[in-house]
Length: 189
Image (cartoon, rainbow, N blue to C red; front, top):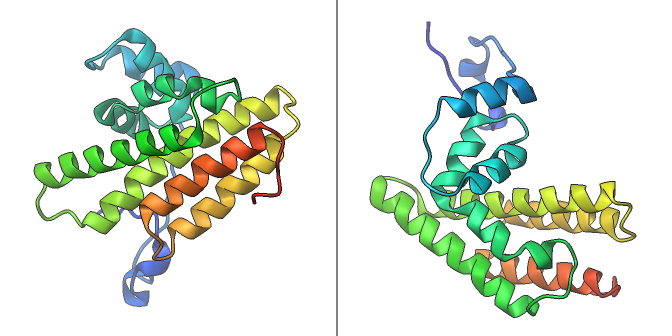
């Protein structure tokens, strides 16, 4: 048996799809994630692993990827911005986001020279969108007035990510739109 894993079934040839059986995997529950996490060894602070476990929503792969890229440290440095507290301006945040993507992509390409730079850029940007999505869910849970609008911004940014837009422009737009909703100005949508 051959196991073919994809997140884009629409990109597979019809002849391949016709010979496959679809199997969906569900996220692990909290207990299974905890047990899995105890068997792993990651560099970094325990608080980073704790954040990565919450971030992953039951996906061990996301825990590994977030820890390997340093995403928990980025989330910590942006915590005030993500939770709508008084923080640095959006240009500083955009610079941090761009720097994260560039360093992550450079490391991935160094580890595997056959990696597509475009695909790596999209994957790194997707990690950032997931981080912002986690923050938006928390704000919605706290009944923050702009929480649902934030989710809409993320949906729009994710849609744009699938186009040929510059990742830098996209991340600058994300930071600016998030900051404007933070101060209550939804006009900049």
